Image (cartoon, rainbow, N blue to C red; front, side):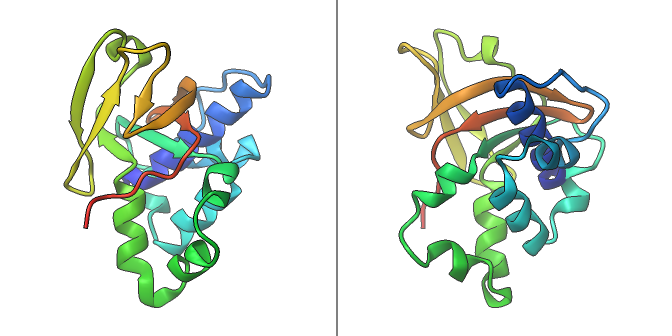
Length: 162
């Protein structure tokens, strides 16, 4: 349910970053689909059967990697993750990008916080520098609001430990 919200939020974030309107009526998944720069994320969410989770009521916060972020992965990594036999690993990676609740950019301003992810490990959101990072990934679009949460666009896929 929460992964679906992640996707919709991603779409909203993308549409705002490229000049689209602030359409709050769409969930995270639909927002991500409409954005056009989260095609890889949407495909991964579908492969992991997380669409319904991300369309759930929420609220959730999704740190959504762009298509360009996925392109930074080593050659063959994404293709391998999308195979049915790697569904558990893909699910773990995707849910590592999602936290319960609505975390807005102002909540990270001047702070460094650890947030528990739906995957079970924590991520570090660092707003103490000139920008905000999540486990070192730069937030390139913030506070994209969806009906079931918020999306923050990141430039790198973050990976859980282990």
